[in-house]
Image (cartoon, rainbow, N blue to C red):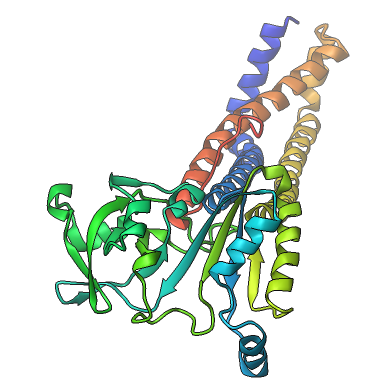
Length: 380
C-alpha cells in the first residue's frame, strides 16, 4: 500500500465515524487551548509586571515617610524632628557615590478647586528633577522649571485624567493659564502630563498609585499655610535615581545606613526598591506559570489518552477488516501505518482547532477580565 492510499483510507474511516472522531478530537482541542491560553496569561502577567515596575524606575530607590503612632511617634519627634527632610538629601548626596539625581516630594492635603468644584486629585509639591527621575513628561505645555522654583511661581502641571475630567476636549490654547485654587492660592496651568497606562490592582503582580490624577506644583511655592500629608515629616517621599541598575542594591544598603544615622535610629521611613519588586513579581509569576503548565499538561495527557482509547477500540471493532486486508496482501506495517495515520490526523485537526480556541480564549479573558495576554509561538 502506498502512503497516499493509506491516508485516504484513514480519512475515510474518520469521516465514517464522525461523532467518535469529534469526541476524540475534543480532548485534544481542550488540551491545546489550555496550553495556548495559560502561556498567554503567564506571559502577559510577566510583561505587565515589568511595565508597572518600569513606571517606578528600575534604577530608582524610593524613600517614603511612615507615620508612627503612640509612643513611637513621640520618640520620633524627640529624636528626629522633621522626619524625612531635605537635609537627608544632602547627607545622601555627600556619602553615596552612586546617586545620579534626587527628587523630593511633598504631598498636600488640599484638593484642587476649579470654578468652585473640588477635584479628586493629589497635589504634589516637587522639583524639576521629578520629571526625569520618573521618566514622565508633559505632552502639552511644559513641566516645572528651575526658574519657577527660583522665582517661587504659582504654576501647576496637571495629570492626563484631570485634564479630561476638568477641561474635556478643549484645545491647549484655552487650557493654558487657567487657574486652579489650591488652599488660598491660585495656580496657573502650564502643562498636561502624558497618559500613563496602569493595570488594575488585581490584574498585575505590582499595583501602583494612579499618577494620572496628580497635580504638580513647585516645592518652593509651598509654605506653612498649606496642610501637609504628614504633620511630622518635612517630605512625603524622596526618589533617588542611581547611576546603574547593577548598583541599586548596594546603593540602597548604603542609603539605609545613612538614614539610620541621620534619623537617630528611628524607623519613620520605608525604603522601596522597584527592582526588588520586579524580582519578587517574577518569582511569583514563575510559580503561577508552573501551576498553569501542569494543568495544561494534564489536559494534553487526557487528550492523548482519549486518542489511544479510540484507536484501541477501533482496532478491536475492525478485526474482520484487518483480516480481509491481510488476506489481500497487506503487511503488518501497512495496517499499523493506517491506524497511525488516523491517530495523527485526529491529533493534527484537533491541534489546529485547539490553537484557534486558545487564541480565542485568551482574547476573551483579556477583554472581560482586563488581563493582558501575550501569545507565544513557542506555546504553539
